Length: 102
Image (cartoon, rainbow, N blue to C red):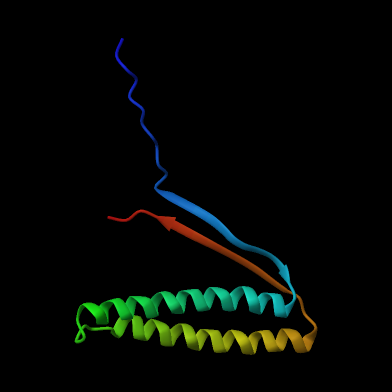
């Protein structure tokens, strides 16, 4: 008897519901700022890795992405200020769509 070959089917796409709910402005700030901070830190580590490999490496992408995220974080804080002042709750739906590319 020949052993069965085990194969594993892997989905080429995945959707993850990261955040889905209603929050106070303070809770929303905590959630979204944590996401911003993680992404900014990711790019800072990426920039540091480039620099460690070659001090003359082109770090323009990580630098520009960090600046972009920091600007978005400031805009978000102003947006949440408006929610606080208006006594509004905040609904957040955050999905990640992940797929393989070649």
